[in-house]
Length: 141
Image (cartoon, rainbow, N blue to C red):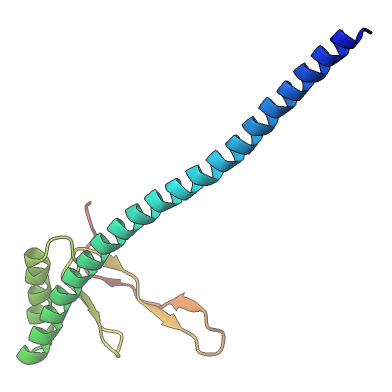
């Protein structure tokens, strides 16, 4: 091989190597920057969704506090009154369903759900259905 061909071949190889090296380095840097930008965008989106969820929870908490406080103030836990009160609370606060379970396993619901009463065995920690089912209403949704 002539010297001229060797120099041309060497120059071409150096150029190809340089172009490949720069391309690989540029690609790696671009990927890192792209990941950072995508993560920033996802973080901002998650922050916005988290703020919306916080607002939603705060509203639900306030309506739940209102229902609890008024039930305590009324101090009337007769089945018909309490069930009607919970049903009206459901109507006032669309999207919420209010239920009360007392320590004697009495269940009150303002909605139209079928509820199975469960008991937790202390020894095994297993939930089992009681022998009787408590039927309030079956949902037609």
